[in-house]
Image: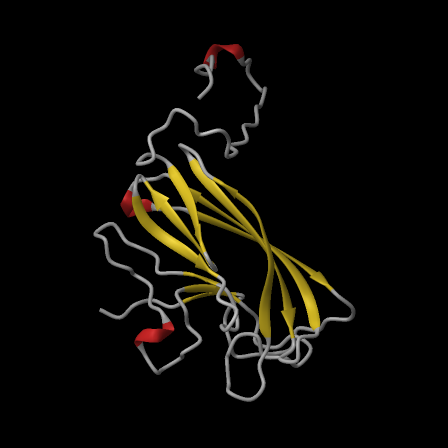
Length: 196
C-alpha cells in the first residue's frame, strides 16, 4: 500500500485516474487478500482464506466455467450441471453463444456442438485487494476448427462476503469470416442459479 492520498492536492476541475493492479503480496498472511491456487485444470480463488470460486477448464467439458460461486454463508448460489438432468450445460457461470457460423457453443447436444479449448492461462496474480486470472481459448467446431480466439480476463475483488465483485472481460477475435446467428439463448454470459 502506498502513501495516503493528499485530497488537498487537487484544484477545482482537475481529475485523477487510479488503476488498481495486482502486485507483490509479500508481507501479507496467506489467510488475507485474494489468492489463486492452480490444481490441474482448475484454479481456485480464495478470499481471506475461504474458497470463493474456481475457474475450471477440464478438457472433456465443452467450455470452461466459474463454479461453484460461494455466497456469504458458505453455500454456492450457483449450480453445476452434475446436480440435475435439466439443462446439463448450465455450469454455474460461463460464456458462450448459441450460433457461431452454425455451430452451437451454448448447448451440448450429443451429436453436434462446439467446444472452447483453453490454450493458456497467462496471468495468475493475487494480492491484498484483488486477483486477476487471464485465459485464452479457441472457440472451435466439434471437429476442432477454430472460429474465434478469445482472451478472457477475470478480476476478483476482496469485498465483504455478501457483496463479492467479479469483473469479466472478454475479447473475441474472428479467425476468418464469423457470423453470429439468431438463437433463443440469452448470453453471451450465462448463470445457472441454484434452486432452493
